[in-house]
Image (cartoon, rainbow, N blue to C red; front, side):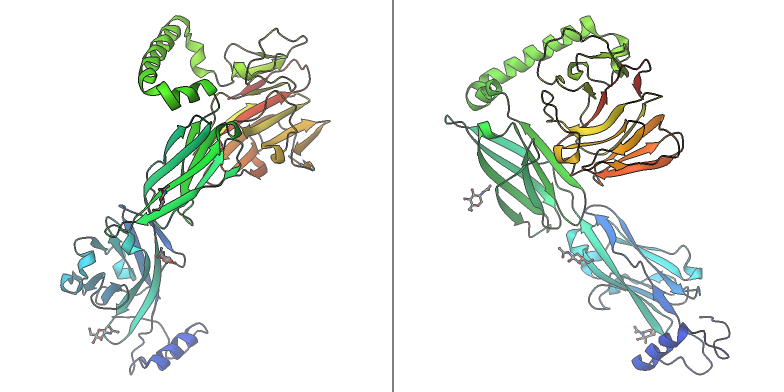
Length: 454
Ligand SMILES: *[C@@H]1O[C@H](CO)[C@@H](O)[C@H](O)[C@H]1NC(C)=O
Ligand SMILES: *[C@@H]1O[C@H](CO)[C@@H](O)[C@H](O)[C@H]1NC(C)=O
Ligand SMILES: *[C@@H]1O[C@H](CO)[C@@H](O)[C@H](O)[C@H]1NC(C)=O
């Protein structure tokens, strides 16, 4: 039975409101019984994914045994309930049909007043408020819990048609979302595009489907990204569609049905042959992207280190190569997830490193600031600075030697750490990884020590 210590003689301050509650609700602790207890649950909503499992934990304060109590988890009304467990046994007769076969009582810790109900195969209808009631036949108390269900839908599917006048009609579809999803279109420069969206909900599953369409002149955009999310659940799904190349547009709009499979087969064969002829083992770990490197930069064989040359190399200024800035990009853009890498800046006197949008104009001299979709830190004139506008001076305990960069596409943050001091240097909030971001590095001085990426 419920045990509390010394309540007759002395009430701790905190128990007075509880007693008042009992007085108001008419459940005055009986003669000589010292059975007031509180039931507590998570103060924050509990998240669950559609199809997953979730535990709804509750516990008694003070820590008294709940073994002989009736424990009841319910939604709007106490009966029928989500799950009833009375004196050590489940009571399925009092269970709502919706929860039959979907719940498990977790009795670990029940002697200490802790218990949970696990809901299996979560459905959208589980979203909402729950109560857990602990009843020792004279006293009953309960807590309220909030369950937030999220359904992460399918990868958005983008279908594009380009007509003779060069007008792009694109449609993005995705299903399986909860709660009601939002769709956002952007071009590869990150600009939001106007679209029309139809949303529908399945009456049987409660899951939402979206179809969103837009029309743009093809000259206006180089590519389209469609992102679907169900706020407040932070995760989103993004699909991208490249439009920029007029030849490929022609293929897509007219002859692609015949030509594309042939071209693909030829391309795969061609690439396979080239790879088999040229692939050298060290290229496997090439992180820096030689085709983007300024002609004033020299990439070492391993592709991880870069120095500035005295003379420019003679290189084709093809698309993607830095022309005005002595910079280089990393090989991979990161559209989602968490990624980290380290860069040894060593004792170099001037450098910038960070991330930029994949669509950065490498021909122009772009100011290195978030306004121009570059998020970076630098060493310049012996000062470490965040390349915001205006710049913010940073104060690492000692000059940076090795920098760890962490891109978190879920939190939309880019964080720089000093590896040697294990301290945080600065954090940028990046708009989202909607537009793929990729690492970039610039060197401004001919310094014998290279900048090396790990
Ligand atoms: C889901 O439940 C939460 C409380 O847990 C509530 O705030 C929210 O409005 C519910 N969502 C929907 C779509 O009913
Ligand atoms: C608590 O349990 C007793 C007997 O088991 C029952 O009579 C009473 O109605 C219950 N109280 C509540 C609030 O459910
Ligand atoms: C949205 O619904 C309207 C009317 O039913 C329809 O004409 C339109 O094509 C739909 N749009 C999409 C993107 O499905």
